[in-house]
Image (cartoon, rainbow, N blue to C red; front, side, top):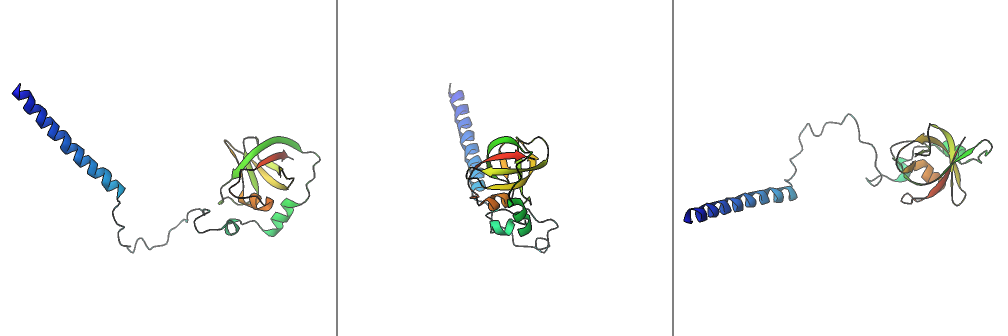
Length: 160
């Protein structure tokens, strides 16, 4: 019996030792090492810049690359003859890195031209793009319609 108690004490001590060392590894991950000083290689220019992101010191106006003429044409009074309604969908802000005035939605089966109309009656011509999941509207379209970038407005989608 004494032999088993001695074995159990050794196993218990080993378990405590292993637990203590694994705990140190967890604490090391929570407290990252200080950054290394910059080297000459780190200061070299990067070949491809990352895509712009809202909130990284960029404003929506700075990221919106559509011209005044493009916005004016998109906001012009739409010709409603020959259009067909694809449905109503809630839209979120699409990637600010993708230029243009577009809507990506599962309501669209093939790329084409169309327009979206908000609940208040505002309308903008868009490029319709097929998509999956939630519908996305471009930054330029959000701005042209005067929508809040954090809103999830419902729009009716029409295809030409």
